Amino acid sequence: MNISDNLKQFLEGKKLDKITASSIADYLGISNKTLSNYVNGDAYIPLTHLNKLSNLFDVSLDYLLGLSRIQKYNDNIILEELDAKEIGNRLKTIRKEHKITQEEVAKLIGVNKSSISRYEHGETLILTVCLYTFCKKYQISSDYIVGKTNNKYLKKWFLNIEE
Image (cartoon, rainbow, N blue to C red; front, side, top):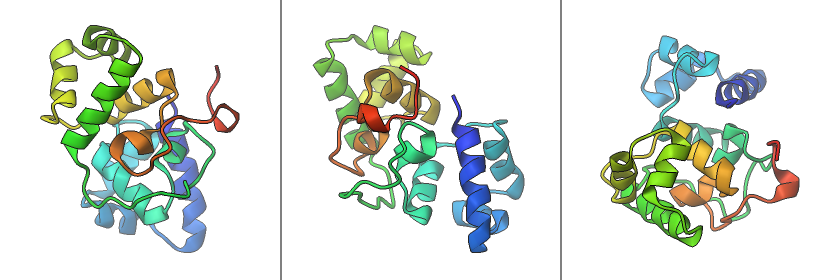
């Protein structure tokens, strides 16, 4: 997974626009060290922080995650807060559409079945790394999962992943 590489490349490019790492850390409500850990791959960025970066830079989550080369969907919605219940409903719907069990999803993304159940019931927000793995496997837009677009599936010719 190359989330940290994508963040690093993206944020380095944005420094040309006079946006500093300190101002980004302040915007996210985190320390400079925590931001550095995200960018260097020493910690996974929470989905809430990734959403805020998506809003700040007006780009898709799929682009920041490296799932797509599409920087922004035509119908992108800026979500200030993520709705864990809506995300859970979308995860469950997609799981059922693909006729896979919670156990199969749990094995794919490296968590236990109870975590999948908590995600699907909106009790817990899905971890970014789990969302990335799920979206990559089923070619689903992470922006769709969180409710930022109605574009459900990643388009193969825009994918930035090996098949």
